[in-house]
Length: 424
Image (cartoon, rainbow, N blue to C red; front, side):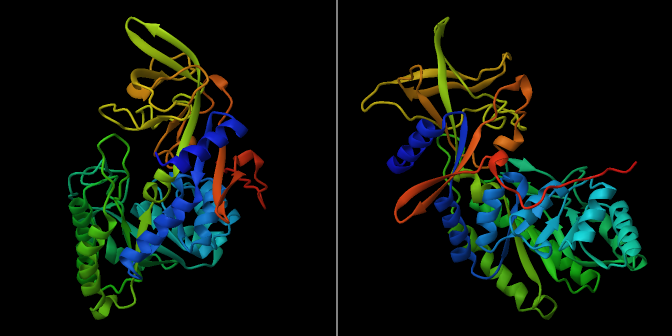
């Protein structure tokens, strides 16, 4: 861990306590800049709010010129509160309820990404009632997906998108729905890969599928939305994705598509989540108790799977592996030991790390968990056993100094609250 980052994290823990999440604004800005340097103007970048919907992070990303992808009206409201224009928000998700669609359409949402014919029909009915023509994008479930991805959301029966083989039957039916206007295609079929060739293959396959369907249906698209598939390192031995290599592999293909008359005005969207914020975040937890049990050194912490379900290996991981941990209080030259790191819950599976090599860990030491900026706090069952929820802190660099902002959601002054009345 970089010495300056270690100092910042230790200061946050000392001044604000643990458990806590810390996000580094500088790294997030660098990520956005890296994408723009690699891809130029080829992609319009959007941020998937589900990765981390903290309003302060949304404000940061909005200020950097990104669009927003949401999967609920709660996320939509957060985006609006953070300054995103409704027209810069896309709404995806497989089970959007009628009241959600109605609110999104009334707010003037940029596009609704439709996952089924039934959804298109409901969007059309609501928009027709409101006297609006609503832009929609068709999400496609490809028949095949590349390998070497940690997350696969297509290539099989799925709640996500319209099966590729059914699109030819559906597309002519769009003319029946006069209150919707199809503006393009979307696919997010795989994610979390560190293999550049696999990511290039995924983006190339999606480009080929989008352009093929446009030709078959004599359709001039306004937008193609690519699920990026970019992964981040979580474990020892992981190498970060080389974005420059990905760009070198995909840019010529995109430039070739752009030369075709049908696609000169088409916007290519790149939907990103964990890659933008994941490595910019750390969870901090303190060691509350130390014990030895049948030859194992166990350290009991004030945060467990209730605060970080992902690090505990409970978000779809088939084989549990230990994430990267650092002891922020370790002295110079301390010999490494092997530790089992557990949380405070009355549950045998509350294990953050089963065999973690760290410099000597004692009571009161603060442990940092890396790659925690995405799918951390809000992806965890914080109400289980009613422990206090972690604080959240965003670190800005101002005139070379780190300035810590408390961005814990309860401390934020939202310009408006979200009130939803569900009708039955």
